[in-house]
Image (cartoon, rainbow, N blue to C red):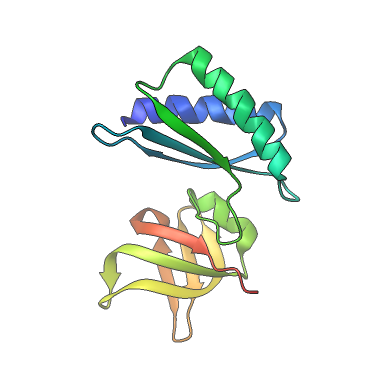
Length: 153
């Protein structure tokens, strides 16, 4: 999916989230050849979001998406909370999780290692610092494949 279409979708979803006092967390889009597409949207609230709120938002967003008709072809819409082991879509999202454990998968290895787990200790723009068992690592968010919260039970 092209960047303009993704940006248009994100703008529309953020607008709908603002109307419902919800936090837009992220979007995953997959459209394969000959397959029905998937539009997965993550939303949240400060004190957590309920299943009823997710269902209501999903129904209302589905109507808006049908009216705006910006997605070509057929697709399934999924609206979800980010969950306990949430994926981070933007470096600013990391800030409220300083002091917590995260798992990072890099695009390119550092010292032959691509996956790191540790405590998030600082975030400065798109750079964050991770304290592992062995060392402190400085990581550029945009050089990661995936960053997730590691919820400890």
